Image (cartoon, rainbow, N blue to C red; front, top):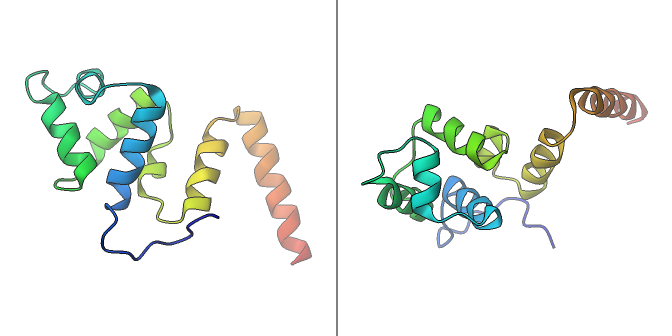
Length: 113
């Protein structure tokens, strides 16, 4: 079952949750991810750990570098809705031609609603 919107305060913030999920899927340590995202190597692990625990949030430029290293669209980190987050990942993985086709199909579906 997809958790559409989580208002549970016991859960980590959405950025923290998404960052940890994709980092683990990529098989990267916190330190390696930080270094690849051009965070100082002596603080890379600690900073990624703080991001994943929700203690601190990176600025948008750092989030973009993390997304680039992880090969995902930056908006994925901020999507509170799990279904939307999955769509962002799938859409971001498509070629530009396939993205245009998907948009066209979605626009066509809208007319039927």
